[in-house]
Length: 256
Image (cartoon, rainbow, N blue to C red; front, side, top):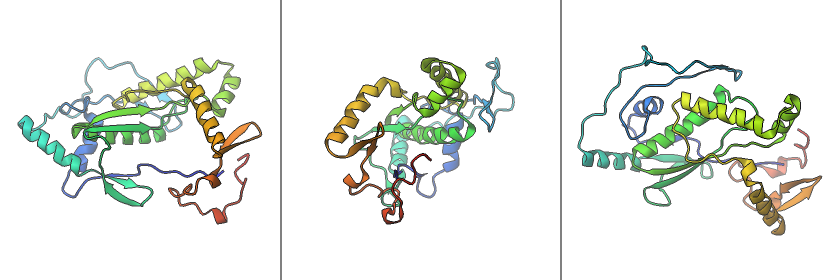
């Protein structure tokens, strides 16, 4: 089945703003509301292996010294942050252009990001995405927004079931091991934690109700024990990815 894909692709500010400062802040700020601080660094290998070291007793000697924020009055700082917030633009996948960010609720942002499938260690490529989320969230927090961040953990799928059979381990033991490793690595990278990390297995009943609702409305169907979204029932399906259904072969992805 063809699947569309969309969402945030890029983050930008008007010319003259310091993107380098933003990037530096994302790596070294221990708290988004504080001044510059030290870095906690973990080492990840390309194949996902981990070089774990005991927690350092002293600060890393090679780290840059702490640089305090410029002394400005709180009122001026608040005005500056609001000005920076008004400059935020996001790439709109549907319209293929950048648009000013306007929160649905003034001063608050709801942020949902896709987390890992916890059947193995996350690798350095995975963490590129998580650092991008962290960069955006830190800037929103710095600009004064209240951010409600939710990041899901996929703890049941075919890969997890295969790994359970291979290692002769329970679902809970397997997924807890790699979920804990993922959260530990986020801490090593100094990523600001999400407010919630819901797991798929905690919401199976919710999924069943949602899927049954789609079936009842004619938007989904069952085939060989699995349920699929009926793309023909949704006229705008594929708009985000700009899919060309006329040149697509039905069922070509089955078993792939």
